[in-house]
Structures are given as C-alpha cells and as structure tokens.
Image (cartoon, rainbow, N blue to C red; front, side, top):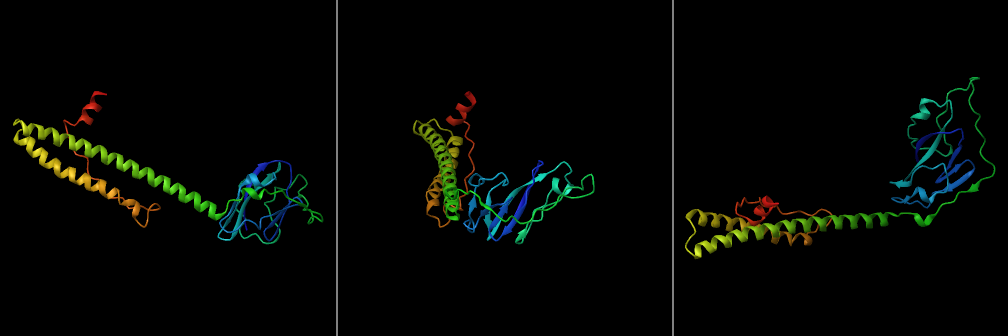
Length: 238
C-alpha cells in the first residue's frame, strides 16, 4: 500500500491502522478489497473527511491519499510530507509535530476496541474494463476527427488545383493560352495526381491493423502556390 499525505491546518487528530486492504481511520474501517488491479474508486464514493483523493490499484498496489492534520506546532515533515511507501500492517506512522511547550508529544491512542464500518458507494467503482472502453472511445473519436480534417484539406486542394487546370484548359481551347500557361497546367496536373493519390490513401487508413489506436497517415503533399486560385483571391478580399 502507498499512502500519500495531504497536509491541512487543523487541531483535529487522526489515527490510522492498516489491516491488509483495510484502513481503520479514527475507529472507522474502510475495506478496499473490492478495488481490483487497474480499478479506481472515486473520492466521491468514500464517506469520510479523512480521504483526499481517489483510491487506485496500480499494478496490484493500493494507492490513496489521506488528510494529514497539522496542529499549531506542525513540523516541516508535516508541512511537506513524503509518500508512505510499502506501508505494513499495524499503526501507520505519520509525521510528528514539533514538541509542545513542555517538550512533549501527543500520546498515541491504542488500537480501537470497537470499530464502525465506513460507508463506500461501490456503484461508483471504475473497473479496468471501463477505463479501457473509455480510452478506446477517445482514441477512435480523435482518429476520426483527424481523418476528417485531412480529407477536408485534400478535397479543398484537389478542387483548387482542378479549377486552375480547367481555367487554363479554357484558354487553350480558345487559343489564347500562352506557353507559360501550358507549362503551368502540365505541372499542376502532376500535383493534382499527387493530391488524388493522397486522398485515395486516406481511404485506406481505416483498414490498417493499427487503426484507430496508432494510424499511419500518408504523407500530405505540399500545397501548390496558385496566384489565380479562387481560394486565394477570396482570402485577400476578406
């Protein structure tokens, strides 16, 4: 068990014992044996003022956060507590305050003879399967959004290049296109093919074995400079 400590200035006191997967906090027992490997029990499910975070089971080890009350004579160890690692069964040793005015320390209370059962709402337990499902859903949503964005850019570029190719073609048909126009069209036709190839490759991404967790995106072609492109003219006007 790993216990993190959250310091809080208060004159209240806390006494904590560990018994396997159970913590007895000021005579109230909280049994976390239901928190399996990879599970999370939200703080909201625990009815106690002495917990200050979720209870997680990470690689078989329970990890939780307890409130550490700091009295008026709190010590640096209480103000900046370190995590309690590999906490053994028995009383949990918490940082001590500075000696009081008489040079003494507060007496430790014996193990409570009677204990109450702490309230835990197990309906809020988050299992590993639930986490995996949420992770996969988020990955799928992100991959779909990226695919849509790439497709949108590809469609826009193809339309932009095709419009310029067609415009030059009109000039060729009526016999007014210059040699430079025809050279531009030839270069744009190669670029157009590259963008169409890219657009076609995007349609294959979803059949990859790694879709949607780690899609391998085709290399997006460079955007050609087209001075007479409608998209550029619109942008300049705006």
